[in-house]
Amino acid sequence: MQYASWRVQRTVNDDGEFGSTMILTPEYRVGFSVLREEVGLWTTLRIAVPAFFEARMNHHKAKPSTDHAEVTKVALKNHFQLLANMYRSVKKLFGQARADEIMQVVLLAGGDVFFRGFTKLDPGECLLDFVRIYKRFESNNIVFDVIEESDQRFEIEIKRCLVFEAFNELGVPSLTQWMCDIAFGYFSRYHPCMTYEKDRMIARGADRCHEIFTWHSIFLFTT
Image 1: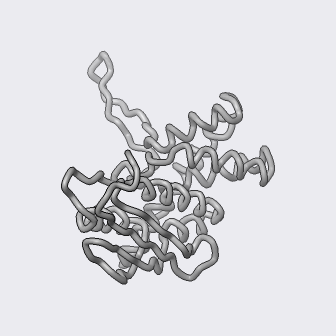
Image 2: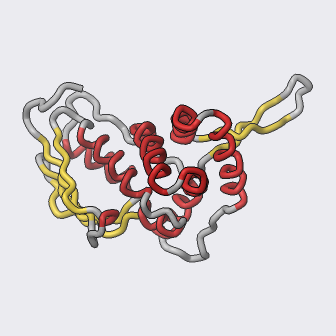
Image 3: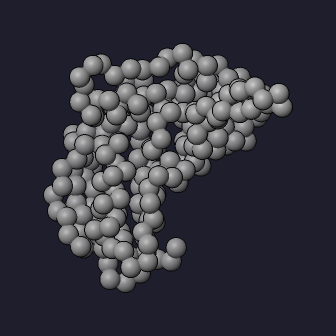
């Protein structure tokens, strides 16, 4: 996952002078498009523009000598600050129940965009190759213990969900469960030989998340 909600693209005008353009990351571009369909263009601008500038002003910084997880969490807070601001604005305009409906649609519509850095398996690759990709990608989001790692089963317990902690510190803990729903959908259809189970979730009150990835010798579904 890329952590900045936006990036700066350097541009050159017709006179050869340098300028810069703020470009939102793909999940935010998708989110704004879906939000516009839900509430209309002008209401979307009323929500998004102040939220964007507030997010730019509220830049979180890691304390000196903090560990990798804490540094990562600060990066996640910066990434999701814009989302948190938008959620609060939507709630103020429409109330809690309708805000939850709108933001759930916005997040789930983004879906796989949140996993754009998660590599697909090449033909002939197996569960252990998936494990390698998973560890590299999710080291930015979670701290976990491996219970079993083999060519047929990858079982872990997540003891820290940095996404959940970031949302908590941003004051919007309810957003985490929808991020979990996105992950569940993504991993459930990741590969036709793999099944995914998640029977405990920190975001829903458990002390740890529990995930099992199982590799089967035959395709279980078509991609």
